[in-house]
Amino acid sequence: MLDIEEPAMRTYKAAVVQASSVPFDPGASADKATKLVLEAAAAGARLAVFPEVFLGGYPKGSSFGAPVGLRKPEGRDAFRRYYGGAIDLDGPELAILVDAVRATGLFVVIGCLERDGGTLYCTALFLDGEKGLVGKHRKLMPTGSERLIWGFGDGSTMPVFETSLGRIGAVICWENYMPALRLAMYDKQISIYCAPTADDRDTWASSMQHIALEGRCYVLSACQHITRGAFAADYDCALGDAPDTVLMRGGSLIVSPHGQLIAGPDFSGETILYADIDLDEVVRGKYDFDVVGHYARPDIFRLTVDESRRSAVVRES
Image (cartoon, rainbow, N blue to C red; front, top):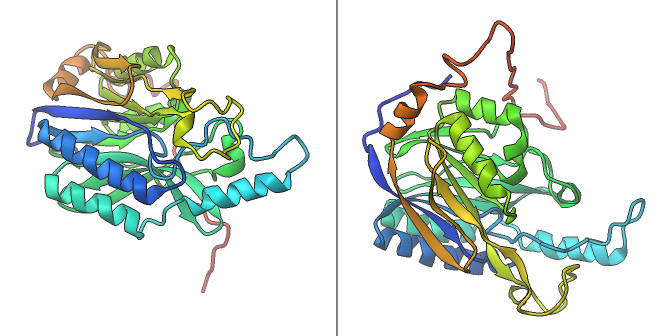
């Protein structure tokens, strides 16, 4: 259990960035993210949340040549191309963005395609204006065919950071449908619950409202608004090849600890949504519901969480 400190800033402006990445070009995506960070800062934001896999790209509609029981050569080529568009956490793409965050003082949560050895991970990065990269969360459970191209995170990357803006953590896309993971985050007293996603369905907003009410926390969810034209002409896309076909339509939003939509959902195109955060609303919400406190029944229900790092090879001396 982390110690709880009184945040220095009770009210501030937060932003969710709804924009397209530059697929498979993390350098260009980092340049775009830098401009968006500067724009959000100029508008007075202190916190900005970007979509899932903004650095590297979400390969919407791609099959990676994988019928059941078979991997086609073109699928291996597609993975090689995708792998080439991933980032190393000590690479130049992230350094560009860290410089922008340092210049503005923002706290930024951004999705990336993280490369580690021969495996790719869907990862949320936490960037602090003073300290740079302070941590990451690897998606625990990729959904459907994502499992072919992304590895599985373990319990060692589920941080919640104590900051002057509140206790900030991230849960990615359909991980938000995992009740045990949500409960683990609530137990860390998360107050700023970030949900980078690729889910642009009408039902997503109601899920985010439920989480805000359940956790009595602010929920900030960012999704890309991106068309087929953002991808190369030879990109294999099951949704078609017309450049104006919308592959992800946004739906980014911010929800209060009382479940009220205070920004979005927006489906209009690329934009930045803003809302005022008041951390005292988190406390007011706990008055009648604290899912890991006075509304819990540990005599009946208990959750065990393994936060150890799981490695395929363990060397002992």
